[in-house]
Length: 247
Length: 241
Image (cartoon, rainbow over all chains, first blue to last red; front, side, top):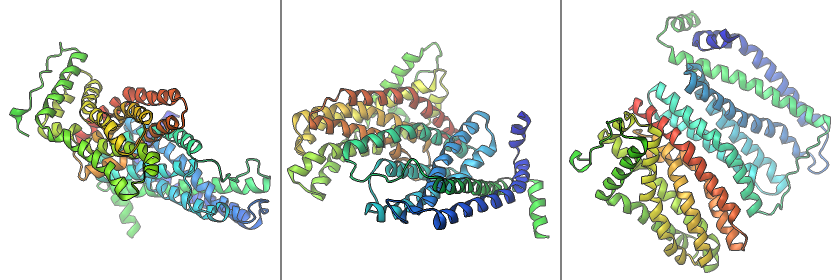
């Protein structure tokens, strides 16, 4: 079992595994995501309060959920980088940070689009939105720091330290923003997300979330493969791989 | 900077204990700063100028300033600390003292803590002392000014400590100043929220004990964890540059 982790440290082995996994991740992800979204957008029943405009939840919730879990994954990878010095963990963080940034932005954007018909406003300084905005800044900081450092190994470890400092702060930020929101703003708008959803609403939601997770896995593999090809460009196996692709 | 105006660190001897080493680093930083007094004055002037911008840019009405004053002062203090973080490590990095510091037998995180505390005494503390004057200028009442000073007194060390992590991470990089701000401001947000929230609660007449305790918790968390992160980041940055 531990041998698996040792093997995972080899970029070449990971490259092979990723190539084999990717078609399944892509197919499964597309299938589940399409199923969830089509079901949700077209067939799920109308919400009794919001009518049809709630349907953006099937895009909004998966993006927000995965944007947040990506940061946790990055934090785990950061620990692996600092403690075990595994190269692939750093490749993961570098590959996945931009994905997290885009997903957070999408979550905020779809949230704004949802907010306009339901709350009457594109933006509001409530706890969740502000926390997601700060998450956007945290991702931006990680990407900026990574770009600013030229040496690969130093960049890996500096970014790992930054990600860990950020992850310690995330619960603090969430708690403080919620506190700030209850202090400064009376709840004029209630988030109309019913906690108890009927099955024909939460099943497509679950499908969308799982589908997006698989698609994220595919994208992460793809981006990691690209990064590995770039980093290992002087090795034999990369040269063979690239030349074989040409022939 | 010239080597002959910066005192030499006499810490190579490993019979010097950790606390004595901390005192040495702390004292040296203060001594050095007082020989280059401009670095002390700049953040203070910046603080005053930023506070001045708000009445000019938004509204000089007493009603607005009374409501927004605490927030304005907190944001200005935050930005001043951010601006001054550059010279926490950079002067020592430029003339090689930082590498000597990292090579000391005493634990690096304690020496970093000593440097950060010296930085706070030189930047944060003067800001707190200047706050009553600026508080009067933004028409805050006496009770609010008192609570504001208290929150800044507890909050500015937290800002220095978190900032030291950012300063260590961005040491020696191009455009380090802006990058530092990008990295550190999200981490400053909770401190800002609780700092201003305390003053808002005091203005409404509520008891501020709990809020102050929370600020104290931030301080303790920063004091215990930030030096480790900064020390790790320093080692990484030095191996890079």
